[in-house]
Length: 340
Image 1 (cartoon, rainbow, N blue to C red):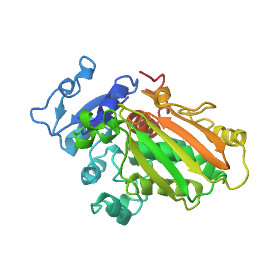
Image 2 (image 1 turned 180 degrees about the vertical axis):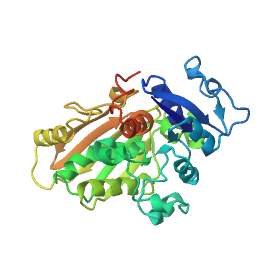
Image 3 (image 1 turned 90 degrees about the horizontal axis):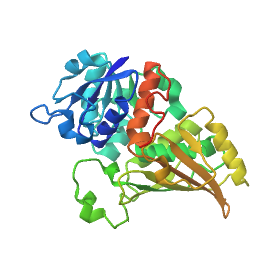
């Protein structure tokens, strides 16, 4: 049994973490942090947890959290995370960081895309990227893991088999991705108000989305090839889910059957990847930690369709996968069976 804390307990990813942890047989939730006044009970912040978790959200210092928890999920915003992660590590906690603060290797690239000077640059490049399907060995021995985001997880998992096998060109890849509104977080924003996004479908951050350099960096690291993608995200008026349609040029003549066989070979023993024959939909993976994908060959191009639940496999579920690896538990513990 391990004790865990969650920093930034008021958001959607924190809520999903708590929903998973309450059913995890080897994890106890012992600390929640929030700057809300009055140390509200978690059920006041997340009413769906009424009667399930009896704990308050407190404005705790790192040493106070470390007295209660061996592992910490950091669900703080970008830039806020890097300001406190070193303190938690110094206090003896192992940290799974759900922000983007430790995902990029180069502090200059981080500053370019996030608009902040990185205050803990020595950990960039040495912190394992928290995608267990690709980096499980590094995650197991880590004190800090950079948990991936939802768009990046979908895109990287969908492209890694083809790129690693040399079946598609690493340049000129197009990623057309759509996400539900919860991907924007719980803080109110004009563009995600019901009257603004309902009955509407829109592209955003065209050519400027922060996940683009992250996708390129991780796929380059995984495949050993210099990967370049054109990534365009879209907002869909649904609560949750991501679906990516990806287009790549094959390096040689290849069949759909050959591609599907390679994808299944690549993900042997990876319990949360489902390579399917049909075209997957977001409902198939909603409320689960599965990433579903398939491959087609259309007019001489390779077309990959992949989807996952942005709050679970795209955030909190994979964070628990990482915790399981770090703590020496089975990777699926607390995550299977999963579903609504």
